[in-house]
Image (cartoon, rainbow, N blue to C red; front, side):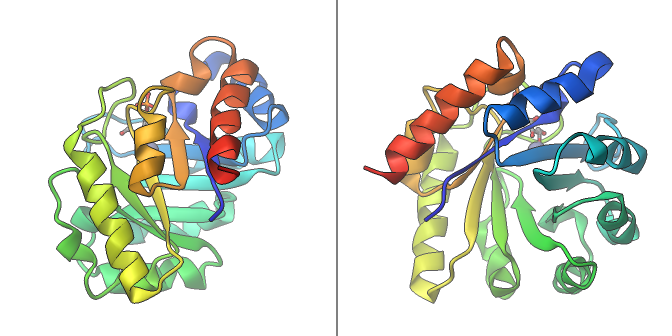
Length: 222
Ligand code: DX5
Ligand code: ZN
C-alpha cells in the first residue's frame, strides 16, 4: 500500500499561495488537497475554479480536489478543465452518486467519495467499486484547525475491513485534525492518503512536510 501526504492549502497563506505550494512540493508532498466550499453544503466559502487554474502553473503535483459543494455534478467538467487530477464529492451532496462517479471518470479524473462523520459506511454499499478513494471526514467539514473526532478511528478500521473483504484496492483518505499525534492511530486504522492543513502550513512548511512524510515512510517500511 502506498502512503501519500496531501497538504490542504486551506491553511496556507493566500497572500503568497505560490510560495507555500512550492515549499510543500519541494519538500516532497505528493498531492495537494484543494478544499472547495460553496457556503451551502458547508457554511464557509473558500475558492473556486479560477484559483485552481492559477495554481496549476505552480506545481505538477497531483491535485486532490475535495468538493464540499451541493450537487457537485454541476462543476465536475469545470474542475477537470482547471487541472484537477482527482475529484472527491460528498455522498450527502449528490442526488445520483453513482452517476456522478461516472462523470468524474469520464472527465479523466480519479473519483473519490467523501463521508461526513455521521454518515454510515452503508452509503458505500453499492458504489464503492466505482470509487478510487473514500474520504473519511475525521471532522465535520467546513473549517480547518478542528479536533479529530475519535469515533472515526473505528469507522476507518471498519471501512478497511469492508474494502479488503471485497478485494478492492481503494485508497482511504482522512481529512481533519491530522497531526503527529493522531497520524499513527489513523495509519493503524487503515488510512493511506493523509490530508493535513494546519499541521503543514502553520509554521515551517518544508519541515512539517518532511516530518509527516518521514512518519509515512517509516510506516510503509515497518
Ligand atoms: C475541512 C477540510 C480540510 C481542512 C483540514 O472541512 O476539508 O481539508 O483543510 O484542516 P486541518 O488539517 O487543519 O484540520
Ligand atoms: Zn478537505
